[in-house]
Image (cartoon, rainbow over the protein chains, first blue to last red):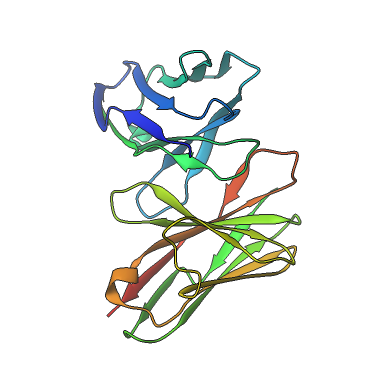
Length: 111
Length: 116
């Protein structure tokens, strides 16, 4: 089955700097890759997603890149703000079916 | 749009009792709902996929007789934790997909289960 690895497990950045979180997946048939932000005790919130027919997608300060050949995808957050502090999860699935999540990254933005 | 609710948000029960958690899609019909479990400071683990009108598909290692899933309508799926024990204490989150052709899953707010 699918296996998703996520790095780093924790990431501290200074406010205004960029943050990059990387994930790799094992199932070459996976074609949908969402990223979620989760605050303590709350539901995961979709922040951006990408499908396998696209190499890059951007939404304001957030971007995701996908390398299908290498089977890895990355989340980029620019101009980080304290409110970006949270746990971020990547996930992979085939056609939006069962999502397999990465282990998560605790992002701390220091002001 | 695409709002998913869960009830209750928190439940504390005694060991040996059963607990039912409801997951509702409020403004859309969900043919497929998913149930996840999340331990503190850990990732979400898929427990089962719930399809309206048919039996749920459980992930490997998830006891189907312990975690009963019913998806009786296009807007409601329930998870019943039977004979709960302290090790079942966890954060249970459901999600729903709008349509088979639409990838995004919308998550409920989660239910914090504590078994004493």
